[in-house]
Length: 347
Image 1 (tube, rainbow, N blue to C red):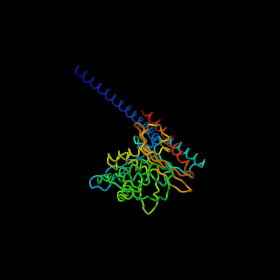
Image 2 (cartoon, rainbow, N blue to C red):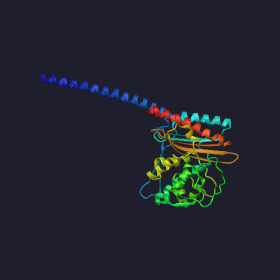
Image 3 (cartoon, rainbow, N blue to C red):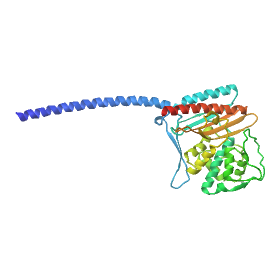
Image 4 (tube, helix red, strand yellow):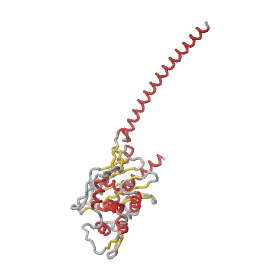
């Protein structure tokens, strides 16, 4: 009797355990289903706002031409950042107001955060004449030449005859002196720090055009046509040169550091620098171009905002050159304040 009773109790306990297990499994599965549904809803809403990786693919740009490697140049989210959309709308309103006032005919903007990999652009299709911005790819070219043939930067060149320029810049600074000799390293400093066209003209005679052209095609840009007087480019396209320097993805680390440090010495202060607090590190270059009918002023900069550095390129066109620096300054100010607020909120 005790044996039968013991087996009966065991069977009852087994049935109860089985029923409890099935019940818990059912409720757990229902909970998972509800949680997944809620998560999908939240992620869908988030993706619409942030342009996150869940609804946007990434574009990878690699350097070709090697047998066993393919160096990484860029990784880009192909969607604009929804987090920066309020910033974009504010700048669009600012640009519209300046256009109504007659201060500008048009303006373009590209902003890229290096930490979050977020970006926005305005008037992305319009091309501008870069002017002295082209001195940045020339700087990169000479540093690449020095990587291939160490000692290039120490070569001395004599400034023994004056140059005639079709365009006379509005922004004049320090220049090399006729009758003196300079190393290529010194000429690069004059070209970037003071935007000296005489130094640039001397450097042009020594530049390896094959390496210069390869820089453009390696970045996916159209090769410059030396028969034409200018090279129309968008804000986003020019930003590629600055990005390669910050990422040290085209030059080696030593030369990338040298180039960005040299750009931090650029003495033009009427545009982006005029919008920033003193003490903020900035590597930047400006460029001007145009004619009597329309003037152009552009500037591109890496802003070292604590642990949240970002890149900004602003290009402007207008009838009165004197009004263009203010536009660049105001756009830069709005971007900086937004980036500063975002950095504080993230900390």
